[in-house]
Length: 333
Image 1: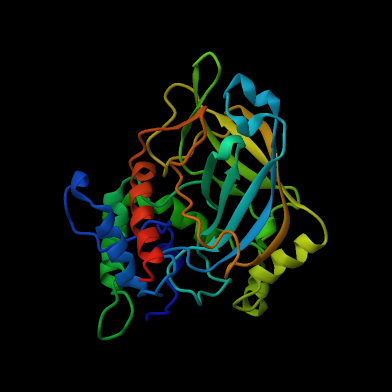
Image 2: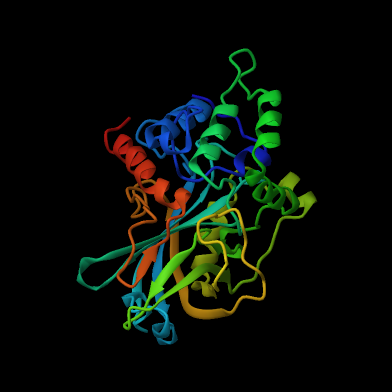
């Protein structure tokens, strides 16, 4: 089992995908390759996630705004409370990754809609992703394979990867320039991908979303990075929830013609219209072992009626990759 922590530029591209990526043509990148590649980088903890392995569970509710009805018919925005199971996590497959690492944080949500229907969101605390295609993600995993002699990635391979994959640059620079949050409760989370909201008139609107913490965004100072410890995030969230509900505003960004809808590495212009469409409230948090979030496969293509995915190749690739990782977990592998 490999328990090294990757530098920020390496972790920039890591989502909850998973396997060893061959240098194949774009349409030949297979989900099982990616999962195997992730296992090659981090090793395997049997029965656990291949990526975003270190995490915490939480429960609460979401109340959507009826004002969203002009964009979507989704039951998420009925104005009635929707039960939510949440999972907060660090990227990577190292269960002992330090909470001070300059790596991606995640917030995954499962909304329990009327009639037993579910809606999932799998978000990151960076406004863009580190790969425009599965091929880039595969190539990153290949570059990160540890050298048998050192147990660490070959710096020359990473240098070559960065030079040949400019789509990895924006997220990497964001992570380098921003220290990790002081708490999961003090971080914003972006949906990364573009989705379509569809209303009762069957009109489709391109949207992106993010969840903005009502507690405010707060980051560790350089001095705090040295003293915060390796495992402070879980207890910070538990303690904060014991004081009262932890809330995020769901902000919807409305796309216009020409905005990139199939490339998660490109941000939309800041001047795009933004609308508050709901509030997420977390009432309690707990360790993930045995808790409600632990067995959930937070497939981002599990979407409610009135919300549809775009043809973003990374978004489309995540679902089958998650399924492979999930099947391995269920099998105790």
